[in-house]
Length: 160
Image (cartoon, rainbow, N blue to C red; front, side, top):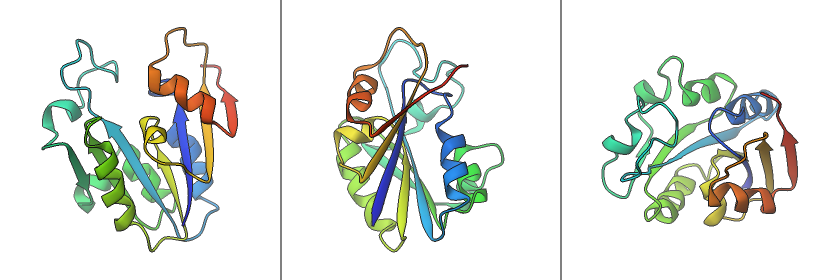
């Protein structure tokens, strides 16, 4: 299975929008949304603290396949499904559980022709066939974002 990773310098930079546009023209491709929990950090990495991802994760990782959750209106996963993804999984993981969570998620999606993975930290654990990095004029980048930028096949500058 071919894998494309869409990563970025920060949340809300347009990763899901790009994935949607790609999925519209990719038949039999699946999508994997990856959210890394930052439990214990002083401030929310998603800048709003309302999503409760970090506080609700069960164990080192959680693979979400429940259609009620995946198709919940207004979520990234519902957008990916509406865009034409054959199957959508949401992986929530701690940094320590990311590798095993990815391994198990990829097994769940192995019947797809290809896979679009939305997430930056995943590049620490897998080597995709192609990597897209979206950046803006953010001055402070997390370590994972700096690493992702170095690994990118294409860098897209976003003016927001």
